[in-house]
Length: 148
Image (cartoon, rainbow, N blue to C red; front, side, top):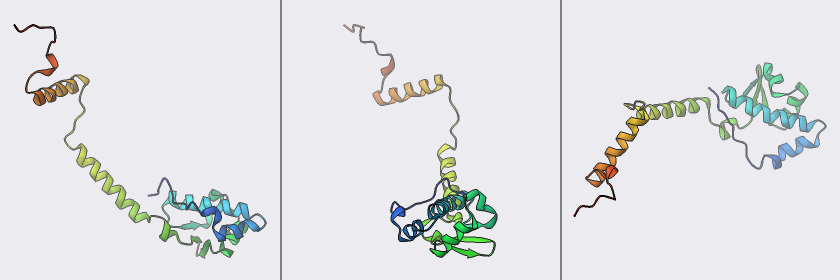
């Protein structure tokens, strides 16, 4: 279960590792691939692991990943790469599942017993609430009726 977003520090463009990467030939390409790797891991819920088969989906070549490894932005793992610091800055897949289940349970509790009402039923309920506040039929009061 993935996320619709990942955290990216506002200082990302000034990060020394990114700045060093950008000084290299095709460093911009590797930097873009790194941002795409973050997005891929968030979407797929891989907890920072990028499988080798995913390189086309993160717009990366092996040369780009080699540059990322050299800057310690990713670490080689069997079958792919692990993003450095993922667990420090991103929500784990298990935490995401727990948060989503908690939110769904809260929504069900809020809506338990609530059935859809027609506009006429909503209007009737509104009038009843007004009557209970005023103690009389405030909705049907006429200002033009003389009571002398």
